[in-house]
Image (tube, rainbow, N blue to C red; front, side, top):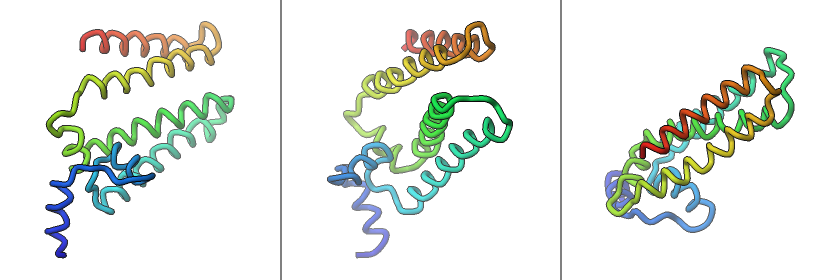
Length: 146
């Protein structure tokens, strides 16, 4: 089978694989090429490492939980940027019958508790806590407009 035939078959076959590959297919879209996966994973790892390197190299006195949350948020944001820009994800997330409301609800439900948790970890009255309150307010106002 030629490479162009494989690409056409991947575009028409929108079923995720079984097993751990199926989890990735549900995020990045079935039929993603090896190059797309490599670019996505490399970008995510580099972005997450950079986000974690800044507080460590700046000698900020962050505890483990703050670093963990920054790493998770950086991983999620970088993954969302690169994966959602790939052709496979566009085909998967914009296919007929895909409900946008369920995706939005899942996305919002992860960031609202994270913002409150970051708010609680910050020292009272700090700039970090004020920033997280503002972030939560903006996120809530955006969610309510949907």
